[in-house]
Image 1 (cartoon, rainbow, N blue to C red):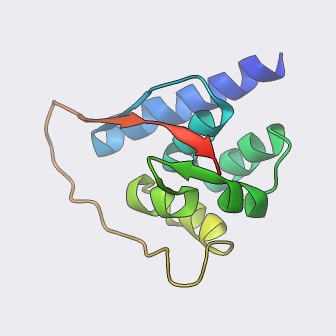
Image 2 (cartoon, helix red, strand yellow; image 1 turned 45 degrees about the horizontal axis):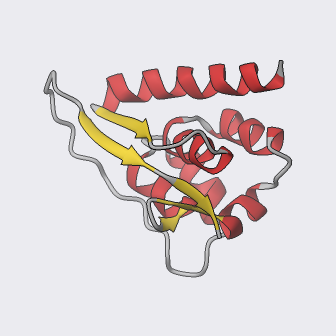
Length: 122
């Protein structure tokens, strides 16, 4: 039941973000790390915290242990998550100077940017 709830939360965040920012994440596997990478890029702070907690991790442990497309999960969130609060929550635990919030250019295109995503534990 918990797995279904996590999948539903990630799916809702994924759909909302893919529509707003024209970015679509395509998971390359079904690993927990990949699911948390999608959550980091799409969810609001409390949803993200719950998704991390559901996996038995803290935000600090997730930042120290998970890479998304060969970059730290906090850096990945800073690149793609439009909610700065989520980025700040993860950025607190990132190595000093590795996370900067980047502005995404808003393109009004019907074709979303597709990003293949692989998450892994270090």
